Each structure stands twice: as C-alpha cells, then as structure tokens.
Length: 482
Image 1 (cartoon, rainbow, N blue to C red):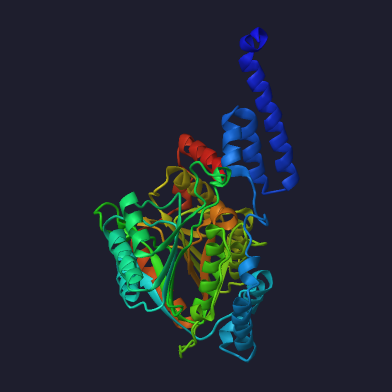
Image 2: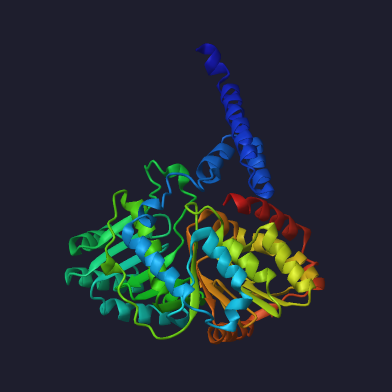
C-alpha cells in the first residue's frame, strides 16, 4: 500500500496509456475517416485522462448498432402497406417531369440505400425565418383533430415556446393524441411546464438523456431533426427550432433561417420516420394504425423525397445525396449552411465543379454562434477560393438556414449542416425537392441573402495572421471530435 501511495500518479498514468493504446487499436480497426482517426489518436496519447474522457463521450461509433433499431417499425404491416402504396404510385407515373430524368441517379440512390420513395402528390410552402414558420405552425396545431407528432432538437418554454406548448396542452385536453420527442441536450423545459404537459395528456419523451443514464457514453449522438406532423396531412421540416432565438424575439442577433410546410404524400414518409424515433425513445412496442396515414387528397404535383440519416441507417444518406447532386450539376450550385466542416469528398466535389466552370456559391456566417465552428469553417475556405468557389460571409446576423439549390432543378431544405456531425453522427432529415418553381423561389431567397454578405477575395483572405491560421488549424483538428 505504501508503494501504491508513493507511486499513485505513475500507476494512473500507466493505466491511462494502457487504456489509451487499447482505444487507439480499436479506432484503427474501425477504419474511420483518417482525419478523425488522427484527431482521436493525438488526443488520447497527448492528453492523459482528458483524452479518454473525450473518446468515451464522443468517440464511439454506433452506426448499425443494435441500440438504434428501426426494424420493429419498418416491419409493421401498416408501414409496409404504406410503403408499397407509395412505390405503386411511383411506378405508375411514366414521367412527372423532364427534370426527374436529369436527377434520376439521385432518386435511385436514396431508394436503394434507404427505400426512400419518390413522392409526387405534394404541395410545398417555402418559409423564410422563424416568425412566419411559427405563425403557420401554431395555426395548424390549433386545427388538429386526431394527432400531433413533434420531434425537435430544441424546444424551450420561453415566450414563443410557451405559446407552442400551451397549444399542444389544450389540444391534448380536447382529446387530440399528442406525442413529442425532444433532444435532452438541445431542449430546456421547466419542471412546471413538464408537469402541465403530463397532466394534459401529452406524451413527452427525451431523446437519449445524458445525466445519470446508461447512455451517457453516447451523448454525442443527438436528435437534430425538426419535424412536426398534424393529423398525418401536414408536415414541417427545416432548420427552425422552437425558441425565441429563432423568431427574432429577443432583440439580440438577427437569425436567418429556412423551413418548409408540406401537404401530401411526403408527410407519410415523415410519419414513418417519426415512429422509428418514437419506438426507440419509448423503449416499448409502438403499435401503428392506419389512422395515422389518412388518404392523400393533394392535387398539386411537386416531386420530393425525404432523406434521413443517423446511426440507425446503414449509409450516410444525406451526405451521399448532396455529393451526387453536386457532381451532377451543370450550371450552378448555391449552398447556404451555418457550419461548413465537410469531409474530403464534398470539398473535392465542390472544387471540381468550380474548376469545370460551374458557378459555385457558398454562404456561411461571418460570425458564428460557436467560435470553434467559425474557425474550423474558415480553415476550409482558402482551398475553395483557389478552386474558383465564390464564398460569401453573411453579415446581417447569423444565418442558420441549411439549403442547396442546383440548376433550377434540385433543391434541399432540412436539418443537416455540411459538417461531420450532420453527415455521420446526428439524426437528421432533409427534403429533396425536384421542382423548378420551388428551386427558383429558393434561389431568389439565396440571391436576396447575398445582399447581406461580404464576398471573400483570395488575395486578401490569404493575408490572415499566422495566429489566426494556427487557431483555424487547431479548430479543424478538433472539429471531428466535437
């Protein structure tokens, strides 16, 4: 015992490196992204104890793991019937539009990897900023008759959040079935409001609680989706959470964001996706009835797919869809994202597109809400500028929109940022839209956002101080870990 007391630190350091080397071997066998691999190896070997904590909390890979199992929902007879009906509808359509032929590779990709059907009978409303989105959503919630399904990364009981929560409490008291899944890290609801939700009959579920939970080691996997479904007929998806920050109500920074409202077949895909999450968080059998999938009466023809990705999917569906869309571009690629920390594939695709005389424009925030994300994003910009990509920094406030529009043909609006976390770690959902009028509307918003940006010039950007470039390099190295 005396020896142990005298050499306690040497023993602990030795134990640390035994565990660290074991973790390094595990990482090497997983054959994950080389940058991410190197980042973890450096942290594990250079920072005793801290490295192990970081790896335990953030480094474990759970894609294809049994803890995220969608099969119980996907194998239910009702879901299979809905999927078959969607496939039948798709097969009976000879040609929705010539535009689909141009993007047929992307459509097949999502179907083959995740059985994401192309839906056609849809009506879509493009929503700019949170105040308009919340006005529409609250109105739709008040009209709910059968059920309300909510799945959000951030729900807070601040001013706008309280209005939202009061409405769903009222609807639950009226007999409407209300189920809500909130991310335990992103959301913040007071105990008083939680009691009111429970007393009203709202079923509230936390996604992977991180305090005193058996999932603490998996706190890195977050539900970043923003989905609202009303009566199985109306669906919302996009970048806007439920908080005052997103509706510009707190008189701080201007928040620029984008969302969409869907009426039609695609809502069925959102509904199935919601049930897969509900099945996981409820830890019980979720029985799905046909009542959640009412007959679609939409007469509009807007073709779209719902792309979902996360540790429960075999492939990085959203990242792959973005990659294919970029590589198939012929005229222009316009991207808006709050966090640009891409993998090598996306960087190369953008560089090749720009060097092929395709117009590539990228809008990112000048000032992020995360200093490490800001510096990490900036570390990628010089190489893009050298390839001919036009980079614009948004200056009016914080741009949180996650949108892409290509060739007046393809558009995507959703929850996924162009970063490691959205591509590989978080649960995300994007709507992929194949519709010229919608693409033109989204591109018009993109061009209006350009009016509030500063265009970067390569020769000036290169003159950043060595200190700034060093911080960028360190942030970039840390980005895959966080």
